[in-house]
Image (cartoon, rainbow over all chains, first blue to last red; front, side, top):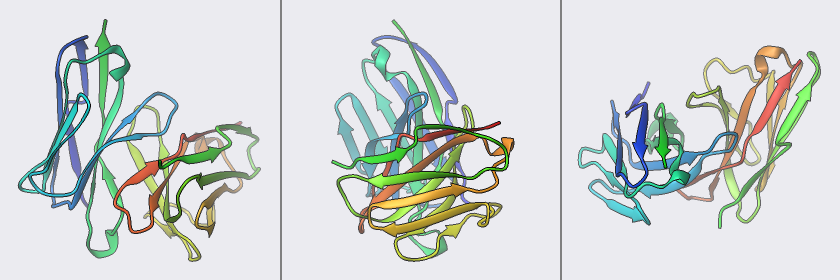
Length: 114
Length: 115
């Protein structure tokens, strides 16, 4: 089946630093989504990417859909304490029997020290 | 907006009983809803895909007779954990996709504890 490798698994940074995390896939995806999950809550959609090469920003967040359609990255600039949480990438394969299903990365645990 | 609610947020039940979890899309119609299970510090594991008016499609290894899913309307899907056992204790999260949409929105999750 499809696999998503998300890295790094965890990050410990100082407030104000920039953060970068990425996901790579063994197969092609037509959609990449980035979510943030706080403890005890459901994931919240941060950014959605639909086209290879697409670069999209949402405030301090920037994400890109890789040209090969097998990877995506998420950058957070000037981190603040409330950025703490688990970040998940998710890819969707539009074809075949897996239509509509999201495949999730393992998550990146972000800790921001004030 | 795209708001998805779940009820209850927490539930404790005794072994052998059944528990129903509701998932509602509050401000949009969702032809497709998904049910996930998540273990502590782990990623989300898809259990089943639910389409309004039809039977749910379960992922390999998920018992359909144990995890009953009903998607009776465009805004409501339910997951019933039947004859619950302690190993069913977990965080269950639903998500909904807007009709023909590509984005998927998650509910806040339900913490199930089986004693």
